[in-house]
Image (cartoon, rainbow, N blue to C red; front, side):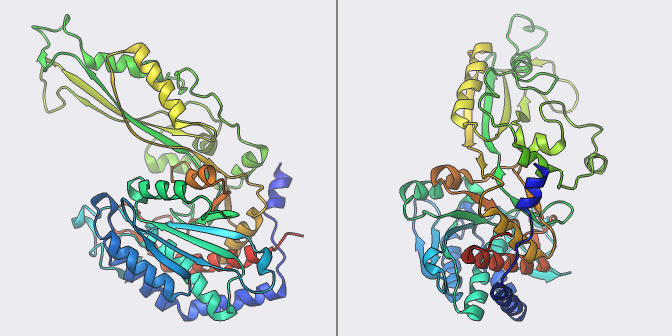
Length: 478
């Protein structure tokens, strides 16, 4: 499997024509880079906060105008029940255009709220360039990364006169708040969105700064469990004993769900999960990781028990059951001798390939009811996992494009530990999906002083150019 993994990552032999096109387009990126930076700043100035419904139509219109100016065709803003979608397309031209594959490029223009404002060194929606970075809400997540694909088209059309691959652009405005409008649109427009490969750039590169090519994401199921006793907090002496204590009920429920060995005890929780392939396990060996340094950084003495032999195997190939927080009774200063009326716990379960949130919800709910039939379960959200095979025929071209764009060997990541709307492409549209993050590891997305390094923006534009050229040319390994 190690040999197959190396073969999958073997450098593509480029034709002189592609090398010439890359050279011209990269030179154009350097010439117009200040203009591209200004473009990122323009979009940042639009406060597009989806959770608050703020500034979304205005930002969508600005993005559409920038796409049109970059040479993308058939650009339109599509109204939805939520935030507008921004669509566009490019038809392949040049030799081999008739056989060119179709690429579906995704991204999101909405951002997280900027609070706490006092923690920012510069106003979040007034982009500031300092120390080789653009600072502002949305720089890395996801406006800067999204625009890298747009600017790649502009440089290619200016230097080569055409783009050799068909591209459909699909940019949404609700990624930070559930992607509800995107789900509806994809469900209703499967034929129009048909493609050979989906591609997007979001999130940071590896912690050591190495570029990555990512092939999957875990899913998630979020819920809240409420247990009640009396209709109010009562005296723990006068009534303690005969009055039920939801605090102990909650402890007993939680310990019935997951044991000290780290394994989830809900019957059927691990059914159907796909074991990692030899190719995926081989890929883990290429991911640099210092376990001792990680423990020092996060102040832990050991990793949690449970399935998976290594850090990344646990992170990518096994589901989790996580307690986000618990509240109830008295938690203030000093003592207050009460038996609480109510206890709540918020939980999430990260799901891996072949697990279905609805199936897991049914199993977890059944378990909870068997232990405490009076429990109230509030389902917060559910997103299926996503997976694309590492040996997909288009994978070598994407790996090589990343190698060219970042001028270094990228890490192949079988699955990210987090969750994104990837399943909408791999499951609903049945399109393989590959992600290449363009943002620096310390982009501080969702936090104050979010930023995007200028060299990462440049490398991202270069990577998109290389991807478009190589996928369009059908470049193959020797």
